[in-house]
Length: 125
Image (tube, rainbow, N blue to C red; front, side, top):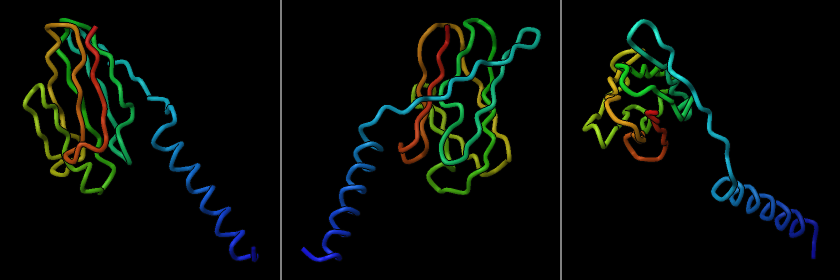
């Protein structure tokens, strides 16, 4: 086996390892708590290569707003979709887009980008 073939095999092995880690590895999610002020709560989600934090915890029964701070020009992240709530917001119209979240019952509300490639969730406790 020549040098070129050995290098090609090594590059392929490293690439296969990276792909396996990316799709099968356990990745930590950033979790954020909403800030409460009087009888309201809010949290900011930075949209830049994904959602940060990707999990937001809200208190049941306190009106809540999520502020999506758009810092990415990727077409996929240009919309945020809450299927359960029937919300599909275009994040490119403003620097920060606010979505009101119902907190009348406990549970998880998932959200995703317009192409369903990046995900996040709201947990109401």
